[in-house]
Amino acid sequence: MFFIDFTCGGHDFVYHFVPSGEVWIDNDIMPKGQKFVLLHELHERRRMAEGWGYPKAHYESSKIEYHCRHFPSELDLHLRQEHKINGNITA
Image (tube, rainbow, N blue to C red; front, side, top):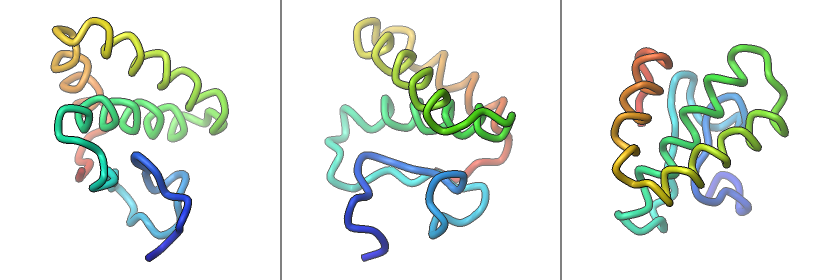
């Protein structure tokens, strides 16, 4: 409804229609993949808030997401860290 090319997830630093302080996850993402996408978006948003450009922030976030997809036992730890650093983010 907002942007036909919205896929996986996004946040207020990338999409103008996402309210400030929110991260959105596409409802087409299977439940077992949602946490990985959330990690990616939280990390990317934090880096962009620190002044990183989208390409660099996205690349670094993709690396962390990829790592956790291969080592899923680390996912919850990384999510807690990103959520704590991001502050009061609604997902």
